[in-house]
Image (cartoon, rainbow, N blue to C red; front, top):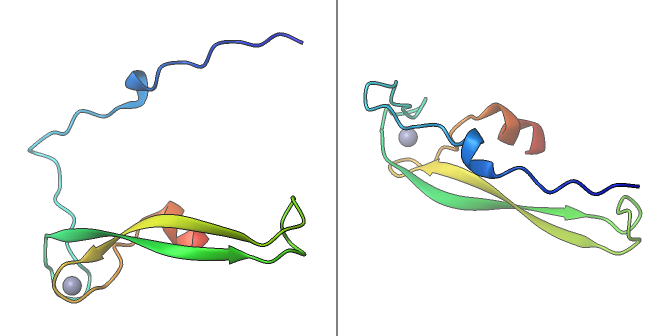
Length: 78
Ligand SMILES: [Zn+2]
């Protein structure tokens, strides 16, 4: 078995282009989002460790109406 060093994350960072599309709330077109967490509870039966697991998943809520910003990877988890 060989252990390779982890690649630096910097390559995956995307430069924020101010010309990029601004995501808006689907409900009210608000552009300001606040950071929040959805808490997933994995039951002991489903958990690989055999113990109940609490897993926070970061989401972004509309600062106006609270609607969650629909990001694909998040939607799969919620
Ligand atoms: Zn909204």
